[in-house]
Length: 133
Image 1 (tube, rainbow, N blue to C red):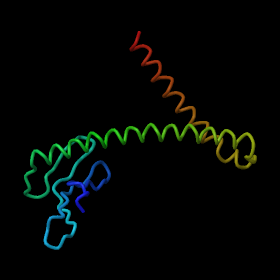
Image 2 (cartoon, helix red, strand yellow):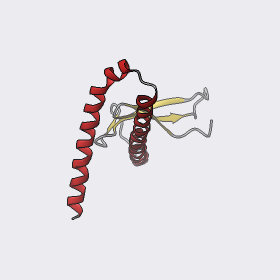
Image 3 (cartoon, rainbow, N blue to C red):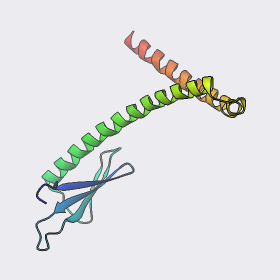
Image 4 (cartoon, one colour):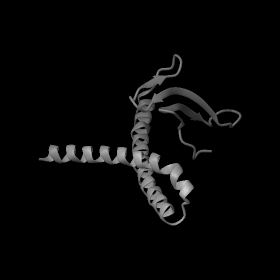
């Protein structure tokens, strides 16, 4: 049990509930005492109840927030790269396997989605080029 971390972060939408892990008790049970709630978007740390967080608590929580933001940013990029792969698979499907009925069902929606995406990407690229210039 000595290998357990001192803090546990129960991830939830936009943050986490923060627990202090305790194994130093008479029953040798794992006890988790909620000490705070974290909002990942704005970095807000709310102590639970009347609790005052120690500087060590705050340091651990702030470190977790920074790491969590990095993880979420990496996942976001990975999700986009997976979408690119999926679009390639859709292209192959449309070219080689799709029936006329299936194509009729998805073509307009897919074309509008792709047009919208292209418009945004072209505008953002132009903005970046103008900013460099």
